[in-house]
Length: 136
Image (cartoon, rainbow, N blue to C red; front, side, top):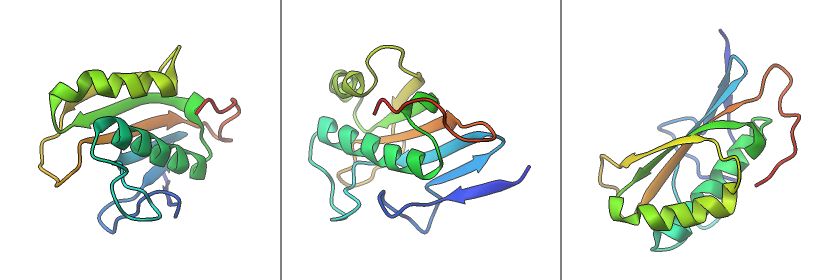
């Protein structure tokens, strides 16, 4: 199955991984953290600020791959501190409200200075891309 690397300047870039890979009608978005793609700085020191930015970064990568929030089928979230779970859920609910995608939350296994959350996503875009309205 052929794969297509997805990249956009509107989300943080890394030479270590692709922002997303499109294969078999699915878009696999790499773990995005709360870095502002313009300044290269963390969006804030709270899990709320970093979650908001990480979701915005994911949204930009989804759009570059022809998907929207309506196409998300699964989300994986890694938290540096499990005590931030309630704060994460508050921001999550602002983004997804009713009928959110499937998700899991686990503890971030590596220590990355200042990083409180990492969010990855899988979206189904099918052979012709998204046809549903964007809710993000």
